[in-house]
Length: 207
Image 1: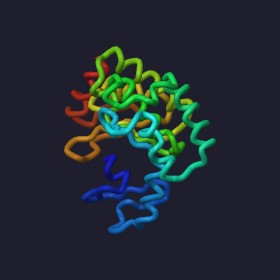
Image 2: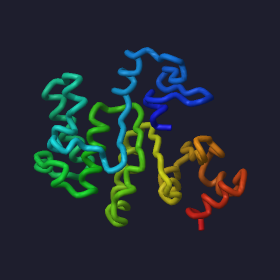
Image 3: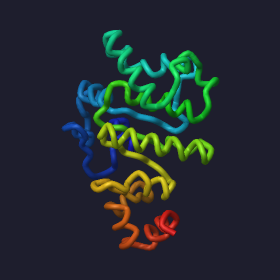
């Protein structure tokens, strides 16, 4: 699903459109896709930081590609550090010198650097130990709510899905073998599952 939303692959059927760009066209305009990807923040499992770059260099990749002014970069970097509750000197470290939670916070800073309209999260908490995971989940949820950024979270953790979709307007889509089985508010799916698969799957997070 995330690869479809970034224009990397096309679905076998159906329609996909984001920010006015039809991703299911046979050949979406290359310029449109490049523009779209700059409007999307993407965090993959375990952060996906480049090991040969410092934390700061990882965060600033897209900003430097866009040739943003130094003052703009500095101000945004300061805001993101405060948002992620990280000290300034952490920017000098390499990924191997960071904890799992710190790597994910740096990856989130990189994803948010250009103030994206859409944030894609691919199981960003799956590799963390339970305590760090819980703290980061709460912080990320608070950040998403405060920024008001549209977010697509892929997770196999039902409790996590429930936590991130508690607000009015949030939607859960249960998928199986590449197809959406049921979608809607978490409480609606849990109370009226369309089949045994959805009932059994969601019962893990509602028991």
